[in-house]
Length: 388
Image (tube, rainbow, N blue to C red; front, side):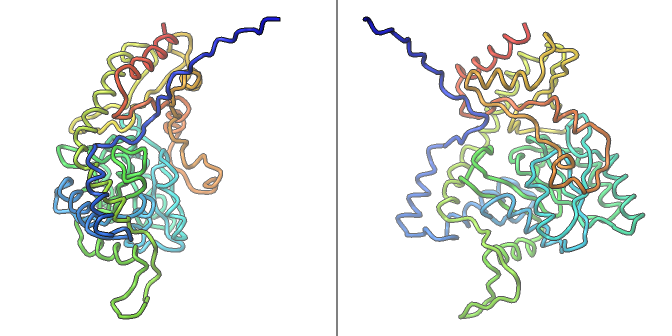
């Protein structure tokens, strides 16, 4: 009896949300680390990477490289003397790494809703939160603002409010390297700022981050704490609790090669964003994060909102995500707000339901700078098939 013939269906290659994109120069710096045996933490690449970042950001900032953006934010809170019993205001619509270090320090996060333009922290509810906490005798120790998906927040308004109440600001610019506000790079506005070089970011060191400040004393202390707070002595002397938070010389070498292509990566991600926008802007019920006056986003991820009451066929963000997934295309819901997370269920929240709606209706589209035209067309075809 003849055996049945099964046609082998070839699955199309995976399109990732945001995968690493090498410049081709990374191995030059990594090889130098191997050739000179600088494989241990610290070394010339770390110093060079810190200098590269400081030169790129300008504004006379100083930079301390860490092994993650989370470590950098933890150090920033320590530098501002946040401790047990303190309160720190944080944007609710963000990744959990923006909030977790607050808890590391025994402090309480106070979450604030978004505003609908940039999707970042609402100045209105920020001011309300500060006033109400002060009225309860709990003046916030710091404000963590986030530049969500690379989009600048309403910096002028937020800094004005912070200055009025004399509360220091930490910029979480983990997603925003290359973004700017009136031609000034994000990460240079706060008392302190943090960057991330995780594998999905606009440039990567495999894993890594940095703490940034105009105050050189902050960065000097951050480096000290990040290397186990070892005092100057021939033996191991410690007068402070330290952390193993410094970036390795090998990973910093990757970062140095990545910095050479940073502007090109920003340019390409913006091209991808405008490609999506030209295709989808006229479709009812689909909207994007908008750049307001003076804002320049690196468009780390292109994110859309789908109002199923208005979209053709009442398409929802989850239906689109599942359709893309069936075609081997990765997309991702917008961050689930922190005040909705079980681990933060008891934390105070100020706002209405803007960030909840953004989470419910939002979807991050594939945005990697290494996405070729054929793959971008493939994503577009899938979306159009659902709204035509």
